[in-house]
Length: 250
Image (cartoon, rainbow, N blue to C red):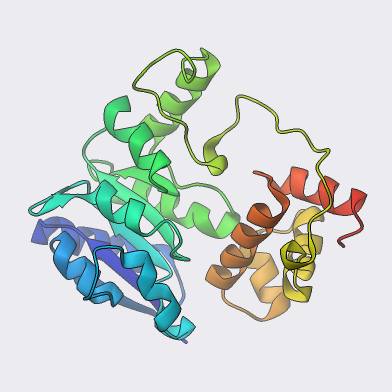
């Protein structure tokens, strides 16, 4: 089954460039959809009745869901962060693609739910390499953005600067999360498929390796990992493995 990708970008040259980056990054069969503004993006996602695009998820068959979204921040009819916020519950890997590398854009984008942050000014080869990190379970970050995040957290400015908003769990590395947590309730327990994924994760397998072992798409493995992290309230495979072992979840 082809993997659906949505590119939200108003510049046609940039859209074409990003589409080439996506095709070069993944070996999966892809269906790439392009949108030039927020309204057309919402329409492509499937929600024509409300501005809250995340409500569209419940009514769409899983095979029709986008698995990867690349969203520009500056669009003709608004800011890409609006779409990210609306899609907080949408099960896709959401990557910001922009020219802005400053904290005023970076941290709000991460808080709105971006899973990665790429600069369109980077070379084609760099963007391909960074985007491929998704398969290895790593957040795709342009080198300049990765350095900015490291510097930011290293100096502890996340708690000092009024403009530095809290990044999502995938990017939190400055403060360890306690591993002692209450056992999950029945509805929070891992599914057999999630337990299998967690077992492989704890053994050090990459997302692509897990996908090959289980005979599923790597995007599906990525979805399982997000669900595991959410249910166990952790932000890394090491935390997930330790907590699951302690609570007998795997």
